[in-house]
Length: 187
Image (cartoon, rainbow, N blue to C red; front, side, top):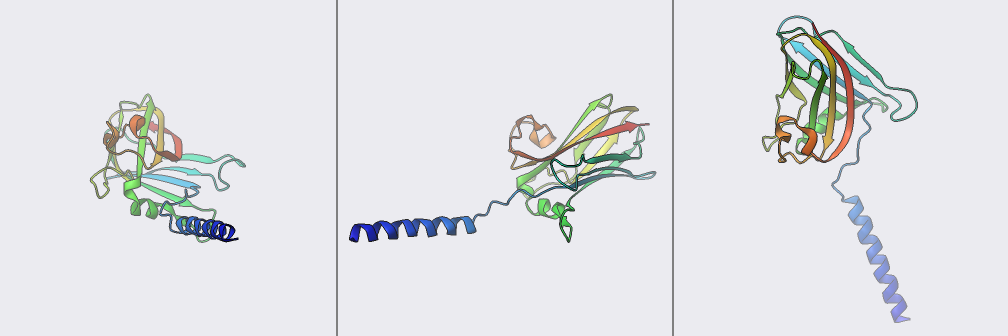
């Protein structure tokens, strides 16, 4: 009987310890991202807004991906990203969470097509360890063309890996929270 009681108390203690561990887990659950808006504001001229909306999440209806406006060759733009979960009320502003957890997030920007060498995107914000985040960028359109811009958010990338600080996603690792591709034209 003493062995059974000892065994039962041991199991109960392990069970309580595992529940306690789960409740104190500091890892954040992955958030549902329904909306990504990349706004490019020139010093003068028309703003360009790239938008991704998938209000029902993966599956179901296809996402709505749009680009309003064209970039102008020779112009520099201030870029800012807004990330939301619009499936909740009130709307969950994930941008704020990314700012608060900046060490664990980084955006990557990959330009392809005609614009691969004509559209330069640089980081304009940093986390507390002086590594890029990507919520704020500078975008320079050097000449005309068309192409695609892929925006990727990585959770827990290795920001110290080769090339990651300059936007090379190849060595970043981590998990992709969202990846969106926009059609882009520079006139």
